[in-house]
Amino acid sequence: MRSVILLSAGLDSSVAFKHAYDRCSEILALTFDYGQRAAAKEIEHAIQICRKFDVPHEVIGLPWIRNFGGALTDASALPELAEHELDGGAAVDSARRVWVPARNLLFLSIAAGYAENSGYDLITVGFDAEEAATFPDNSSEFVERFNRVLEYGTLKPPAIDAPLIDLDKTAIIRLGIAIDAPLGLSWSCYGSGDLPCGVCESCLRRARAFAEVGAEDPGLGV
Image (cartoon, rainbow, N blue to C red; front, side, top):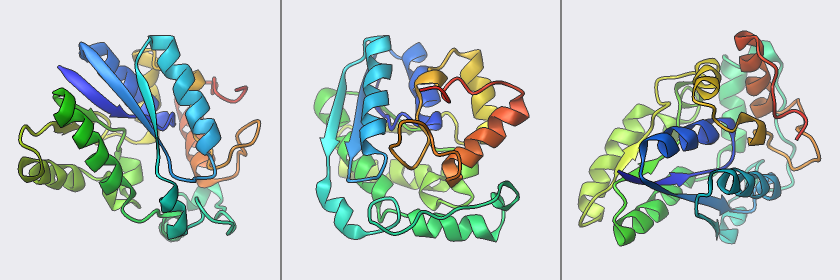
């Protein structure tokens, strides 16, 4: 099997990357620069991951997405949550504030073009159950329906492979440790500081999961 993989260098995509790397004869990693706050860090860490595993990597610029707005791409303040708010209504509100319109639709469509053009069988993504609770484009329903779209939108449809789709962040870390995923090279923060901010929702989810596993986060010193 051969796979295109969407690699943001976040926790989820880094584990999905290693899962695909272990199972596929060839993979191509795609990282998108759409004007997000963390673009520089995501690209830097994706490059490091691909170099470590000697995997071809392309960075695709989509600068016009910045015009869509949202806290990930404009100057508005990022939402901040307490850890006890990560699973409630505040998390739903936070998700809406950082929502990027049609982002995964766009990314998967571009990946499908790469896959069909070069004969890749799969498009690997890091969608997971914890993210799906607030982001519908991370859900198993989204994957199932997009696979149906690919049957009509491509002549030789690749399949969306979402190996983490039933897992929360804690289970993802356990899997990542078990398969020796590049957790230390991953970047989850919404920002692009020298170190992760530790207070955005993505940082909080990562910290909670590592604490639940009882493991030290190897990415804190990146």
